[in-house]
Image 1 (cartoon, one colour):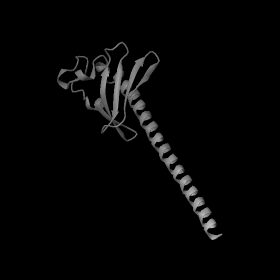
Image 2 (cartoon, rainbow, N blue to C red; image 1 turned 30 degrees about the vertical axis):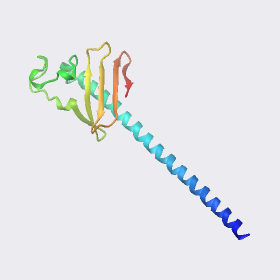
Image 3 (cartoon, rainbow, N blue to C red; image 1 turned 180 degrees about the vertical axis):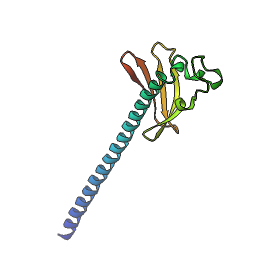
Length: 136
């Protein structure tokens, strides 16, 4: 009788450990998904912010691809000494973001951003309805 009770106890123990492992794994997957969603939201916010800068104080650069933004060769409409670094690297909710590419010469202008340090990267297209994510 004792070996049968011991075997039953071991089965219950293993079952409980298996359930506990599945719950912990589910929580880990959920935490990773929340982190990814937060990163995507930060990049979308950064894209909106950069577009606002390009339509506001940096409007002189709006029609020029970011590959052609050079301090020594800015368009005449730009004020002297215009700092480009705030458009290339900035922070959203404490997370550094970098401009990869702004190309307004396409039929629908495109903006590509990346979290600093090789993090998540996303592209956005500017259409009639505003910015739309391209995917990454």
